[in-house]
Length: 91
Image (cartoon, rainbow, N blue to C red; front, side, top):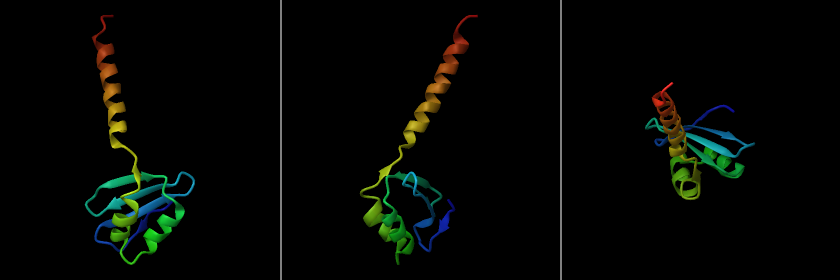
């Protein structure tokens, strides 16, 4: 998987994994989003669109399932909480 740069005011580059159907989008605003269950045809249409930003906003964003970032955060928080609790147990 290699990142594909796009000529767009909104999107800097994209990366797609056909095995997992995960679409990674790097925006010019320096944000990165991962979308799951994106059909290969949608990815192909995105990279060949006259306006990738419009294609993303109209065809991908409304139907795409974002991989939730709060899940990663909650695991980190839970891990830190458990570590703190273990440190408080008298030995």
